[in-house]
Image (tube, rainbow, N blue to C red; front, side, top):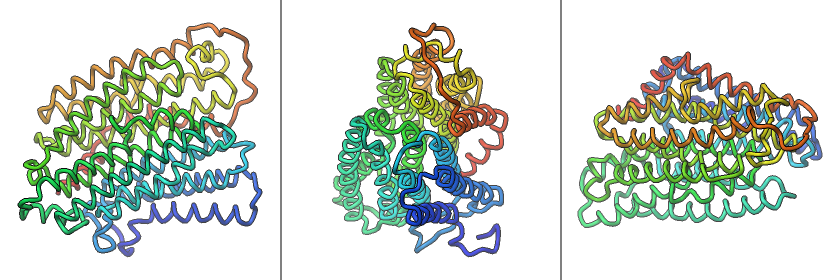
Length: 496
């Protein structure tokens, strides 16, 4: 490592810290098997995430990763891009852990809950550094398996258990498709390491183009499931609605970012467009996916009558926006479009997680789930509703926070790459999204409540997490220059 004299494996310190944090949570649980000492468990989980994120930030500022660090026979690689995504995973994990301090009160499986959250974050961190299809698959499963259990964590809630079962079954099918795609790619190239796959493809694959094309298409399907992209999105509304609200935020933000992190690396490094375009035009595939995903997600969100389900569908729409990062590649502005997608995922991690944590707060109070149930809520909880307003308007792309800048840079980069029509579709969908986001804001601030309801308490952890997410969402606007430069440099390392 050029930035300091530590051994190269220390570059994986964020993932190691998260893994050790999960083990520590299990140790605490084994010593006190029936503990409901929520502050200790929430504190350990939060501290582990903060330390992991702090290490990633330190590595980025110290220049570690500017020259990619290969590890374990090049099966893993730590570069600025992987460290940038670690920041996203760690931030979301910390927010969810803080919010869960209140949300889990009375739950008997608190140690298991925090352990699964941190283990999933560990898998996501490894996904961002995976440089082999084998390590991609293993780390993806490490992130996915805890996620299935987390969705079904509310064991006495039929909706949660049913959502967890559906998520698991669809995820298992997706993993099978992904693994079969990997086997076809291996059959053609004889390699699983990403750069070696590209090298072999450069030498030609006469007579096996069809097999390679099917293999790449199945790999696309695997990533589409992980990012909740159409047509592999149908698990998302059920899972997000049935899961505990903090877990909905965790999956729709961190898990989605992990899927895109590994997709960016795989398709740029292993399947350069010039080498496989004669077999499969994956850029065209991602263009179709981007347009359909953002359009279907937004139109479906506009027809919902429950706020949580609306957010679930809107997260599908945002997956469509980020897909522009892959769909506009090879138009001459590669680092620009990829860094635009990474920036949107960073901001999305705060504004979308914050919105789901607000829903967790509302569920904690026992307020209903429909838009009408939110009527007049601002009179009872103005600070929380102000934070929710910030989240929703940033998700829509209004210029009151970093959500506007991330979309502006992403769409601008697509225009710069010659894909103005992708940016136009994104802008139209953003305008549509303002309609359904505004319905929540109108209900909270303008409508009169249909009945009397009381807010019993002010849960500290949930409030801290919601307000912190809102503050960061706005504050990032004023630090957008340095953050955008970091994202651009991180994306550039992938094309070096």
